[in-house]
Length: 563
Image (cartoon, rainbow, N blue to C red; front, side, top):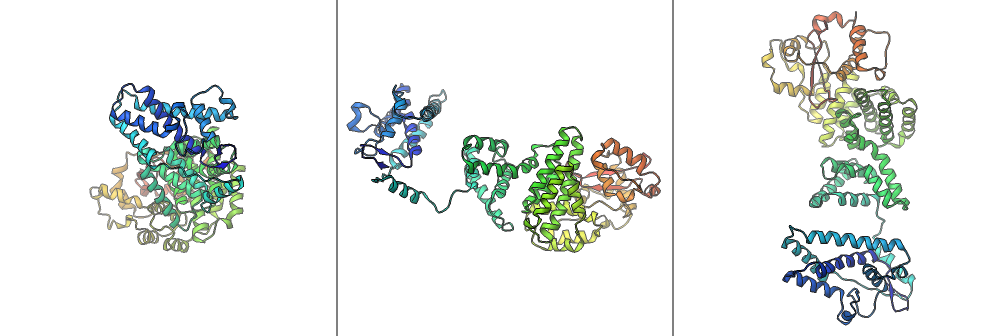
């Protein structure tokens, strides 16, 4: 406090704290005194304790409410607070700022109402009063006010700055952490705090990532995934609430803008827009984020914006949108592995290409810039070995799951031998990889193919058409012949087996509906090709592909050429 030589003191720091405590206690006081008609022993004791807090013996006749800290002075600020709460007529002269008066009144009314309706309830129990008795006892016995008095305001503020400083300013992470905690269920607070710290510790160990805004988004996403924090508070509502509360504070506003800009794609990936993101693309993009690959946020945000716009304008349907996003995720992953992980490049070295790709996505309103870039990468077998033998994935289960999916696609694209792929996965990622060649002879029959085998074979990459065809025909055709070919998977089959289509003209899948694609593939592209000449072989051929556009389960597909 500052002694202004005018028989009262001014608070330098602590007004809000003290005012809140006083309003809280006064609400107790009024409820006990005026609203509870039948006092039992507990109520009477509480009323006496509250009276002791707010009424000094020497001042009882006047009923002048002051804080029972010292009898040597009377703090004018606190008297104004009490008088306003007592609704005296001349309150405008005591506090110049009408907003402060309204805030004090509103706060008082809110706290009063909450306590009143909690205590004075049909189902009110003795336990409730015991809870409040504990609060009152804590205030009486544990609350202390330490007063420092200085002759000049300069000295007072100097001490305040010195004592209040903890060596560094609160960063944005503390703001968002407090916000998340405040929005969580009270019963889960302790568990939530432990989960938060666990996330922070893991992030600190993961490729030496700094605990920055990007890490915070990861924390929030993980917490929401664990259903510790409601989805609505994570991004959009967070931005709204903080903009409203801190609209005059540039620091917080800038932080929210940064958070929202970098977090928007995560919000979308977390199923805010289920029309765009398939489970496969979600898995890939999240895994890139979990692996700490930086610098790709603008590209992802641009792609989601463009695809969302095309969907909204009805240029594509939701199936096409999901397929586009899946292709984008795969393309971005291969590009990211090659540039960020295998070649040990950093985000800074790719700053210009990223800006260019992002601008090209917006300019062309397509994902072609990303696809074109990853087509130029040199992701060869040697790089795969380096990648798997490094500690890039660590012990991350998500990383292992992601690696399985990506390398199915990567190995197909670069025609890497299945044995190499199998060994890399088995030796370095600890995946139970089963290959069709494990079927030793064509004598293996349908009845010997168990459901467990069907499940385990899910680790397969798409099978080469020429590989082990007789076994496929004998064992699987009866089991799968009644399953329909999905539109999305039809596109995947076309893409993965494009070399089998002898066509001089290519077309952009993005611009074709699935109906048109079916027509093009079955009526034009497959006519008079080398594939059709192998009709006896492919009549009951099995195409195995990990199609998570519809579900996480494998789709067992067959194509009979006479259709």
